[in-house]
Length: 114
Image 1 (tube, rainbow, N blue to C red):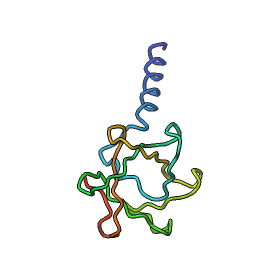
Image 2: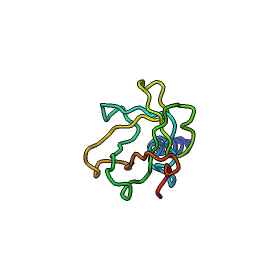
Image 3: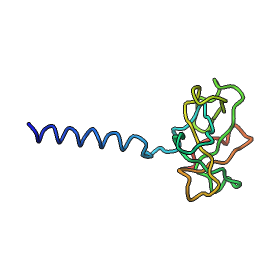
Image 4: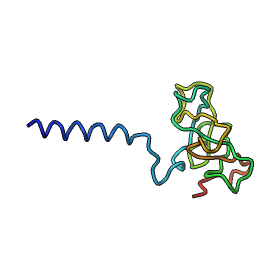
């Protein structure tokens, strides 16, 4: 019985530690309402803003309407963490980022580069 409880405890711990691990679709599943946090410890992911679209993991089109941000690469920035689907932190060094984005002005170009 003790061994069974130990196995169960290990499985529960492993499931919690892998909750924030990037998946195969990462960062392509990030779309919708985003909030840019100023404190890194409160963010879901760290993001680097690219100056060249060729090096970005995802091309992002910033939507004016949150209802229009329903596809990959379409984001709407909100002013409150409570309203966001994803909380992101902007880093200045790409080595510390979970992924990189490039803001595009063309809605047709928005999407995942992977």
